[in-house]
Image 1 (tube, rainbow, N blue to C red):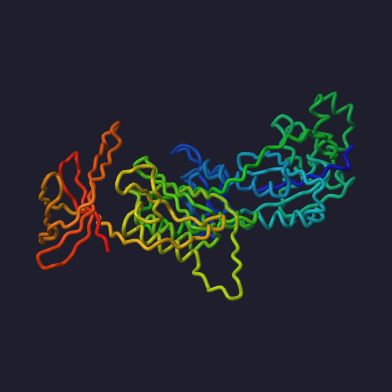
Image 2 (image 1 turned 30 degrees about the vertical axis):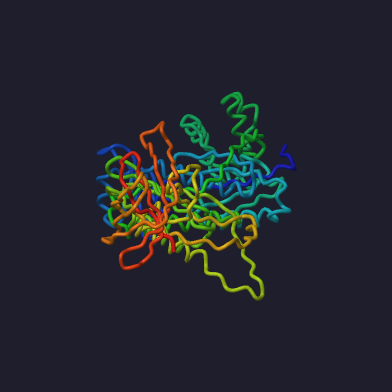
Length: 504
């Protein structure tokens, strides 16, 4: 007997190896494609799309036979891409229910979703099935759904050779009637069992369900009883859910090595479209995108792009990746691409009625990316002081939007402005009683009128970057009468003098 509280939705994607490969290849969507598996020269067709069937192509054809169909595109099977798409489909199904059991085969993706109690969230079963198929179609996969209160009935119905209609919903108590017209092939019989039923003239589940139970058990054992229960829609099942992990990742193995950046970004654009679609379905944005390129020299090239705010603007991501890869190009041809995104919350900014219009964050991100390409990765951002007394003791960090309100800044007393010279300029200094008396700076000689110092600093004696400095603040006058206020530093390790700053 079926439990009235049970309700299952079986999701099936046929010819899964072909669909997984064509999904991110827009140029192949409307072309006949076949997927070859095996080692040359023993390769055979493992999967093919709907466009290839009318040409007369079928499973098991060899490479020689495939060569007689010049209109078909030949792809090599990729288990990595299939596993990536399988995770995407499980993630999609997991947005409707956390209880999912996967029963995929070599050529199909099949999972069963426990949707009992989801009516208040997603409406009646027909509405849930329609929404599920819409989400799956948006991911680039063609599938069908069958809903029943019996686990095995839903699987048998979705395996029906005819994929029309794409949605089948069986009312409670009508399982046996719905199964009666299906062929025995939906039960995945063994060769001996299929041969036995063929000799008996049993071709459909209805004919199998009508066989007397005791006589069937006497001839086939308990396996015969199990098959009869499956045919009648009465077979119980212990649900074994798998955990679907939400991971924004897309992967594609290229058909031929790619060297041009424009060709790479053409493929990346399609992958980003899928990442944005999956993030938007969960009301999320992309906080960062990491691109990992598998190169022909068996190395990987990894770059990460992180804008100021999470966003779903695909054109912005393409521009940022373009600028980053232009500044840090891969050193060999590209064989495979992996995009991995970190999800983030979508940001909303509410301006006051009289507040000035702020620039778009995306413009700032693109501008900073262009500046980084010109001046270097570590030369753009905000300066952060480090815990040291060494001159120029700071590091550069990327700009970030503060999450808390900034403290009110109180005006302080006015101080002279210091213009730091980078790099510091070598200066020739004349000493008198260990104090600077005169120096030559930029081909002019200055005489010191006031000298303040020295201030001695040293540190990092435990490393090879040992440093020691002697700083002087000077007021000097040239022969022309010009006054110069400056800061001189003597490197006590190298025993040389450098002009490091000028005071205004």
